[in-house]
Image (cartoon, rainbow, N blue to C red; front, side, top):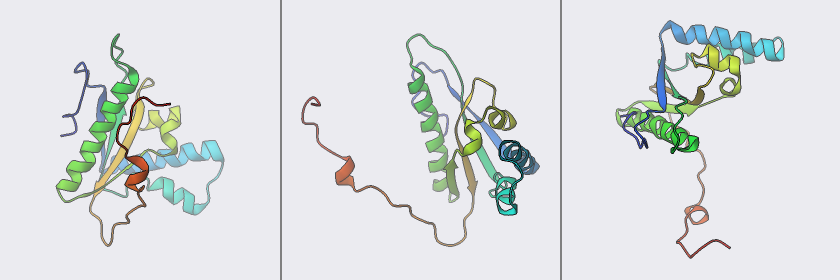
Amino acid sequence: MASRVPDHGKLAPWRFILYRGDARIEVGKKLVELAEQLEGPLQEGRRQQELTRFSRAPLVIGVVSVSKPHPKIPDWEKFLSGGAAAMNVVLAANALGYAANWISNWYSDQPEGRRILGLKSDERVIGFIHIGTHQGDIFERPRPDLSDIVSDYSGPAA
């Protein structure tokens, strides 16, 4: 389902990296090392946060924007196609009865963070989707009032 998205030019400008099993723990160890290189020694709570960043769910799917130059298709359109792929992963997981959470986080903007996570130097993070089951109530974040974000067309903008 993730690959069944709008894709102008049939470029498949995205790919997926599966983090599961012990690989999730190894990623956490490497993120702790990187965070300490950038910030110095971490307090224990923060250290545990980074250590378990990818092991809180049994599966994390990295959705990656792949550079595929094209003379007629702009990069923003290819990146949006990747966003649609990520959203389809979330919707499919929820439809199958799983819980899914799409995040990016600090390491997504760090070249070394992207390398640790298996991205090539010209690739960018669209998101990491954590999939598993959830016990208890699911927090519903506040959403905008529709009257603030929906309007009828009334002609060219002023």
